[in-house]
Length: 456
Image 1 (spheres, rainbow, N blue to C red):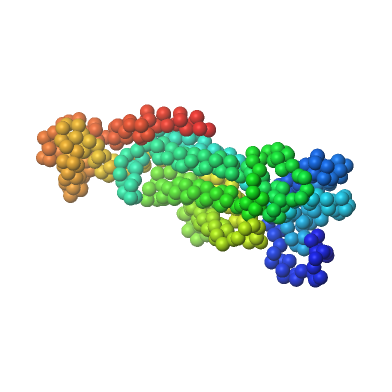
Image 2: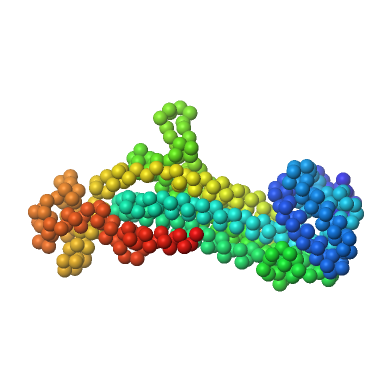
């Protein structure tokens, strides 16, 4: 079958070359974007008199017919036509005749594919923002129900201080809020139009790139045609943002796995989001959070792969750039699936408040408040820290927790201890005492939740 570009060649392409270089196996995902860009391009060609009004209308109607066929599954994409652009152009010529060949006037596949990718990334970025917000709503809903729920807070995976479970969840809300901000900000760089840059140097036809930008709702037109066809910064940026988002999802998934373990028993995942064992009947495995955690690696890999592809490319377009698609397609699919699952996992989470409360009575995470207590009595904090450390060591050696000690035992270490030390060390009061801005105290959490609601 003759290639649409085959006039200069005397031999047919080797079939192995066809199979190796063809991208139609994956870039068929860009069919809608490709036709969307073509519709705007041919409308501009008609308005500029480069093709007649009748020809423009015929081409547009043909493209709409092809899109309807693609959406209904009534087309066959062929490897010998290499990519989505040539497949659609061949379908168009078959549909409306030779006039379909005028569609490609004033453009190249180089600026065409770049435009398709900009359109795709704009659509998917907006979708990811929506899905991130679904997760944020789920976090916010659980936080509202658990403002007074006490959880051991950790540093170095060691018990540190009692905190509100809501406070812990809201930390992830703000991580995802930054992800959302990064996605929104990236739209400023996605919304640049490459179409009209040609292969690399522009075109001799009197096209109107600003008109195409207007039709496709782009904010800017690339001012340099070489940059327009070779820029994949916006793909790298998307992969980078998605990688960081996966880090946040992976960290949260790790906590869900840990909290739901027999050793912690702080939460229970809904049965709908767990699986069993083929050999151990008692098992309830948190497979979904584990897989969310595991899929982080493939997203990182796509980012590194894209950076590696680009790092040695001379200007302008090179066939290597075909490798930008599979990685970003897989990344977007991974993120969409992960976010779509994470929200209901959080919404259906059972919080075991009694187990959390019990945990904070069986540690020394209230020790900081003892040091603060002594400091408010006038003892320099560094000395208060030393006294508290000795009290903790004494309690450990005697198999006790701080609230198990008597007032006489406290006074063996400092005469500043009074009866009110027991109220100070109560886990609920330790949590409530953190009323500094951004702290874990309930009043501050309510302020934080109000601020979070204003972001949604």
